[in-house]
Length: 332
Image 1 (cartoon, rainbow, N blue to C red):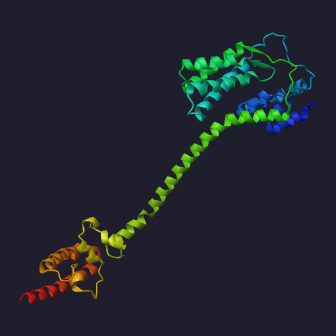
Image 2 (cartoon, rainbow, N blue to C red):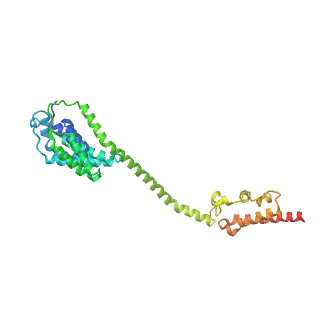
């Protein structure tokens, strides 16, 4: 089917950076290059505007593509610059998207494929084994460092120019579905490592943002917590039972008798229970428990809850006087 210049210009305007006009004209290598570089980094897409009439004529057979009859194509400084640029770009993408792959394998392979892709644009091509071999040898000399992508790309481009040739004519062209399938696979192989690396980076950034959000929340509620703690210390607010039990004392250091004394109700309980001793305890046990609890509940040691401490202190004195009096009377 004949290609129309108006359609080619329309595709160039609508999807030129994605190479739609090259797909329409059967220039798949050029289309793939434009897909992976977004129209040759923008400049190549604009450059295509002046070449579309010649490419449409070549696609319609009105002007046969150049064929030197076995001669080598002329050296093109523009193609050489494109090979070096795209090879370096592919090498950097491999270093960024494939950090888990050894550099001596991923970088030269990516550089060689980038140079070979530029070499295959239009009616020319190059020997892929020679291009890849030059890329691997140059990368080996520089030990696979990231900065080695530029000299590696330069070496592979020079070798590709030395082995340039015309594409054979008369080869059958695959159907459009097969061409689009191959282009899609190539784009997926190029973009998948970058997408994976981007998702990992996004997850790390999200975790950092959540941590910062939690820290900001804690910072905002810090004045409220400080005010509440100050109010509890001054006796303006009552703290939680757990905080009251643990304020100034280590629960693990309490005796069992002290814990029982804290848990008893303040009124209408047996006197022995107020002092934290079992019923029928000896006078020595009563006196020892009284001295410990009096120290524990002395108002001077409980200024943050002075009213409760004074009440418990008086209850302890009354209970001790009654129990001690009863023990002395029984002994007399």
